[in-house]
Amino acid sequence: MQPALVFIVVALVGMLTAAASWYTIDQANRMSFASIAEEAVRRLSDRIENHMLLIKSTEALFEATGEIPDAAEFKIFIGNLRKTEQFDGVQGIGFARYVQTGPQTDAAIGAELARNYSIQRTPWPETEEQYRTPIVLLEPSTDANLRALGYDMYSNSVRRTAILAALSEQRLRASGSVRLVQENQTDPQAGFLIYTPYFAANSSTPQGFIYAPFSISNLFKSALNRLPALPIHVTAWDGEPADTNQIFQSTGERSNHFGASHVETLAIEVAGRLWKLEIRPSEIYEPPVDQTRSFMLAAAALLLAGALAASSRSQQRTIEVGEALRQETERALTDREFLLQEMKHRIKNMIARMLAMSRQTARASETLDEFTQSFTARLQAMAASQDLLARTAWQSADLKTLLALELRQLFGDKLKEEKLVGPTVELNEVAAQAFGLAFHELATNALKYGSARSDTGMLDISWHINPEPETGKELVFTWREHSEVPLDQQDSDALSRKGGFGTKLLDATMRVELGGSITTIPNQHGIDVTIRVPHARVMSNHQNG
Image (cartoon, rainbow, N blue to C red):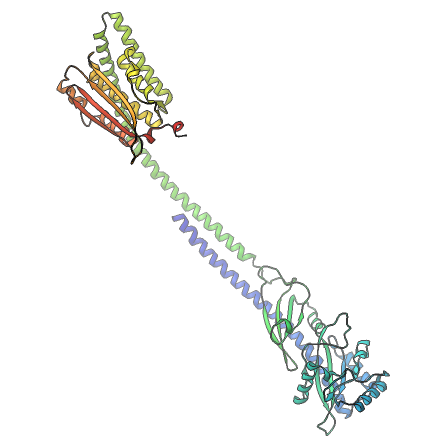
């Protein structure tokens, strides 16, 4: 728990520090990009302002002369403006007369176009409007501009709205997005126009409109492509952002640089119209301050948290190992004491069994050679039994085989295994050890105190598998001793004594290790012992499989 808490606290502090660093750097980068976006708007505003000055300069020419100049004078004036002013983005400067619709005015306009540009053309297209504003002057005299001469801008609703606004307010007014008549049909470009009315001297009747057509794409490129280049991607709308209102979008891709998700939304007024601009970093944009330091700080915090947690875990582990070692030492001392007690008990039992076997063998032997032969055979059987259990480490054994090994020490060759009645039961490691110790203890008691002390004693042993619907199968083992001669009270007490090490050993092996029980019922002629253990606790792995 402590290492996890150390890791969480240190990592949390580190992450908060990294987050603060990220936020600080991000804000600095956003402020830097905001200044870039503002510079882009300033460049665009300056370029539009310069173009409107061109229109105002042309208006000043008209007012100074008090009349509309002819084509030659107009060409010279616009030529001089182009030398002194930047013309990128503007298609030209022109003049459109404001006349009533009718055959006479159409003929007059046709004559003026023939006089100014030597072209035979009347106002176009056909219109049902009361007024016309056909273009009669437009410089420079490029092929595209010559195609626009005679065009009646009043016939188009978007242009007409701007013309009427300029007339009513008597100042510069821009139109919405239109397709310029100068553009060819294969690659039409969006454009707009700016108008200002011209009145004759001492007259309130408008003579026409001085205007300038603009290519929106050229206007933006000329304004934004100046050096130093701005790493921006621009999308512009005439009015609110909508697909139908979009007038420009930069070529190229937006930046996919991590931490370059800045967006600046700005607005610019263009002769009475409001353009909305969304400015994002372009693919060449590089943040002034890299966020790498924030990642490095976060990584360092995690490494530090991991190191401190590992150190804390190591210290905790050292304490746990020390405590486990102490507990293991105490357990080892307890086991050692138990083993010493068991060893003492086994040695005493072994001596008692040997003495009992010697007495029993002596009673049944008529000569010393017969005693020696019989007693030696029983000792060899005892040794074989102990050797088998030692070699297999009591890992597994057949119950009947294990029982016969112990009883053969009592009866020698007289043992009739067919009297050992019960089904085949393959004991697992724990059960083999437990039943081996139980058989040893019961056989030793029989030799020391019970039926095996006399030739008239009888031993009845059986076992079976008892089905129990509620608790499951159980192995029931029965050991019954009977002597025709009543036992002494002392021997009867010894068979049923409580608290001895042998009794404790039997109880520990059957109840604690196998979850079973052992019942001892002594009587005047012997003792009945019943052992019950769950069948599942004694089965070997082979039987389980």
